[in-house]
Length: 320
Length: 118
Image (cartoon, rainbow over all chains, first blue to last red; front, side):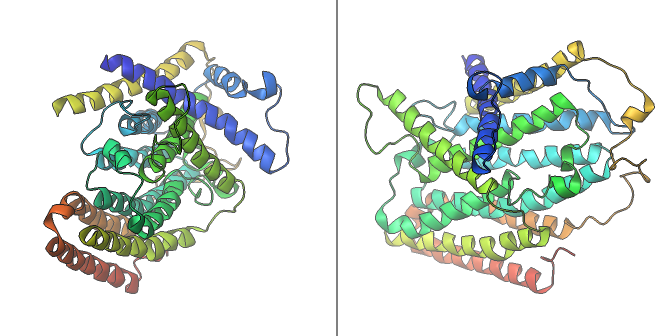
């Protein structure tokens, strides 16, 4: 039973990113008035499948004097970390792999494993671009983990629980919680974009200056695992945003003729993909920060704001 | 409780298998022809100048240190957040003091220039 659930969810977690890569290419083409993938399958929808088949047939190259063990382990770690996120995401009432009582703390813990994989990969490649990308990534991801953690804490304070299911059940939040909730949501969204290494925070990759950053030396399938982890993490943080701030599986009205499970899943996926779309929109609209600007945003703006916000949330709970 | 973590363990295991599986397929399907030039690390087309693993300035180490301190403090706040409703005003004042000290530490690091990328 457990193994079956794990296999099914793994396929979902692999299929989701495949779809996201296609969506990203379509949306970027649309925003920049380009054509985008068009020829493989109707409207190019099979493009990423064809790409995956192609990647499977490409030679694996390990650079000269690289650390082979770490070089191989890094993409696997990134992919597994993205998969582990999904355990605590509730898709619908009762549809969750496991409602851990430390849900959001667990999410924060496993999603931060990604940075270890990225730093390992950058270091093990024995390539200067990779190393620089890995080091930037470490600085960036640890910096944005703090505002992200404080946003999670605000939600935990307001709802009095760490379980994702009970957080969804506690929504919609009472009206006097809104100031705190909105600030936490904005901080969470910014920090999640940075954690996913996406524009305007994509310095670890920065193709104009670092070739491809930490995965410069990675040949096809290992590169694909990094991509899988990256898009998996993007989807998982959008799902967590939906769970914490957008009411999870709860919709504005019940869909006619379907049970609560289908209804919940439809609303949940709609909201999650709306968040994903928003992040893609941002990515193809804005330029990239410089590294000092990026760190200033986190340490000098987001961190003080979210610490103050936590106290405000505490006052609201005690008074309210 | 142990069952919860059994789920996590199984997921980690299945995830690792799913990640290694395509690497195995590549090992079976992909062509192999290795020669020395192919394995040179990419450095914009020139022969790499020295090793990547030389002495260099790890600029993020101050951020790393500051992160460690703050992250540990954040872990302390999780239990407080869950039980604040039962504990009431006194716990809130205590947390205000705790966060105040944390804020002073941040201001000190800021003033000392630990938050500059230099």
